[in-house]
Image: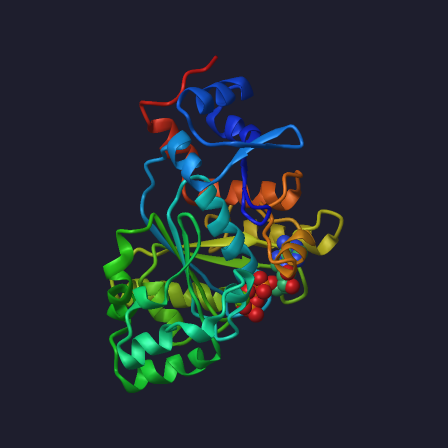
Length: 323
Ligand SMILES: Nc1ncnc2c1ncn2[C@@H]1O[C@H](COP(=O)(O)OP(=O)(O)OP(=O)(O)O)[C@@H](O)[C@H]1O
Ligand SMILES: [Mg+2]
């Protein structure tokens, strides 16, 4: 297995499935599920995960959004997609940000394929732009041309409620999870992605004005829900958390004492960790290596919480036996 590829370790699988490590090893062997060994640790990828866990995913569309820049939308969308894929989810990431940071994270050249502006303006198909990253993980890239998306949507008088919903419709069945990475803005494109989503995740950071923008995104989701009779859920995620700083505790306290935010703040939070930028810089991801990091742990808990994985897995009847 390639070093760049993300890995699910047998020990993580044993924690998730609540069985011993030996049961996992034995199950992989008897069911002839492909696994690899390195540094005395057993690991596997998407296809094996799909066989081992066979989680009955509830199909979901998730948008990472907040009007404030640099709060971790892209870093978390990227790691979230990769971790969900390691639980066996078929994932499509759609980059809507003209900065193309998610496209860059996946090391994809966006100049050779259609991007969203080509779909909206020139009737290109979404499927023509989809790039396969690794088994069960695809990306629809973005480039700077998407800067005029909002204008085009307005000029074309496209109905916001239908636009992205219709665009993803032909490929929707191919995926368990579709993730939109949005620019730090509010506009037609972002609103249309909201209206195509089941869940909006807004990362906030513990810095001065770290919560600015949250209320704006919250109000926008509320208005769209009301005007279009939708039930789009919003979740607030505390990112770059550092327990040593007063500001981190302060922001957390503000969130859990706020009438609007206390019930929608994720239990999972993401600690500050250089691995997020180091791995993207190296063209890899936080799950490429086998070492234990807080980044891996935090994103794992987030994915399990948002996708309800523990409950979906535990509801299954054909779980592997405890040994
Ligand atoms: N948990 C974290 N710990 C440390 N650094 C982080 C963490 N999350 C994100 N970062 C860093 O913060 C910076 C901004 O992150 P990112 O690009 O993901 O934010 P964004 O919200 O997508 O930004 P934009 O609004 O410009 O799209 C990056 O350098 C990223 O590596
Ligand atoms: Mg971004």
